[in-house]
Image (cartoon, rainbow, N blue to C red; front, side):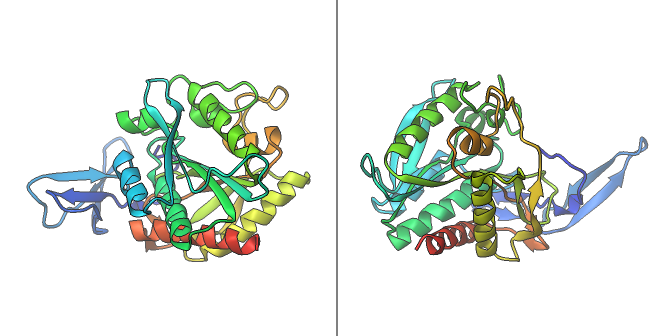
Length: 313
């Protein structure tokens, strides 16, 4: 998960001292050069508790989902759409079941295909909380907050979770059971709305700190032109303090594009469903010098929702 060779001072772990809440460790660290040319980084924990839990970023699991549903007072619905490979429930949150043939705008969101990328779940919570506060009725949002639930529960915090990386398993022939389950739920969603956008929420290398960006597949197809539009809408809405100055990063599609297997989720939205699909990479600890807190992630989600709502008025 900690890919890349960026400035390691951008990694700012969090700590939970005794029974307190999670907080960022102060940016006090030391570099230790090793004899073979490698080096280690140590973070100094001031005023430690008797028991100190350390993590890369704010955890997010079923407890946070239950709290979210409870606090939105019936606006959000929690449903089981299927079981994982290890028989754990795959949860979907939604604001509206709608009816077959509805013309309401529809957005489908997936987070945690790589189970350690918790910023995606926190931004998703910000999206859903703002929908609940606004009591939005003209947009149908279905979301899978913990798509790789087995990895979340087991602490498999890297990519390539056995037998295949979840985000390399999409297409007309899904390579994982979880992918098949979510594809079937997406089909139900499509029947009940006018799909306008699919979102896939990730986190980049652990030391990246340039801000949020969108891995983007260039081209001139009508769907890609719509993706460019939505990237600009969402990028502007998030704001300069959170987005990378060049927030469209050109990348190559993954998977077999001839028989449409082994695709990434955004490519699946684009090539198989013919709707815009965006991937967002949301930093773990810092964005353009700003240390990210839970409140920042929720604010980012709120801004994304506001930008989309304004664009479809």
